[in-house]
Length: 440
Image 1: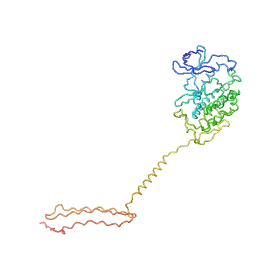
Image 2: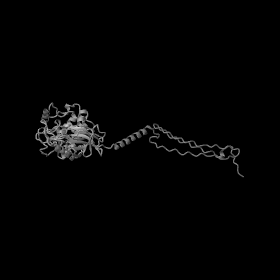
Image 3: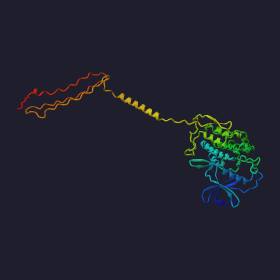
Image 4: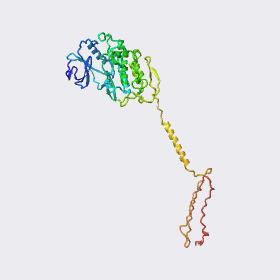
């Protein structure tokens, strides 16, 4: 294989740099020359005869073709998309896939040691969706591990999952002798199911066991089993039970049901493990907050405060379709009652109290038991003649006095004093010095 870069291959793709390598091929970061779209190109290594200490895993060309077909058949946003398949001028097979910018889960764990609870549950849910899409097509990944899980950013989700490398994937009912060798153990030891180790039937439950190992590793910071050598590690997968979370993190309170669900995925009996679809549903029922990498949660919409010293709200339990596993179901969210009627009633009550207080604070001017008599209208003043006879004084105008209202005292009411009426002016004949002059 030509190693000089950059390099142009069939289909109009340019290889820019090497970003990964494995037992079957090398992965390059590339770009489509016309569309300027970044891509990942996996080139199959030239076939070679395995050495004495290596295991012949079958025809690499057939395996490479099968990986391309399986990736193309899985319809999931969490599985890397296949864009092209072909041969170079040097008869090298290559597979063009979407380029996923980000970090692998393996790199994240090496840097941070573990993943926060909300983030780990979020990643596990997406892995469940990816596996469910593959299992519907009858495909078993067989090598799910942190190195094959890419974390990228999509929208506000900074933990968007893409599953890579279906290189050793197989169909559930595939017995092709060229691709399956008796006694060959394929996979990564830290995430290998007991049936893989013992040479039993590899089914979709095998991927669930690997997912349980990944979830355990994210939450606790360690794989479910630790050993000093490979044989001891395989023995622990076959016969031991993982340590409780509290043995590693005694001061951390995990959401109710999360540890039981993780251990159910790690059940030695494959028939007792949940399916990928069941696992996604049960992870969705866990009450966890939004991951800190998300600015807002558009999907996980009944989020509750992070588990802490406060006790979680009690929830009823429901039994899943697989035997022997009980997990909490999401409790119904109580509907909030309208507060408008209560506020209106409180406002009316306060108004009545204020009105009563004002009324009682002002003394009454009326006599208890006595109906006040309205004051009479004042009498009009009598005007004097406009002209007086010579030598006669003009009479004075006597104005009617202003009426005086009776003042009622609440404690000792007084008798009403009659108002003095004004005296009428004297008659003309009675006036001193007045002499009637008879007209002629």
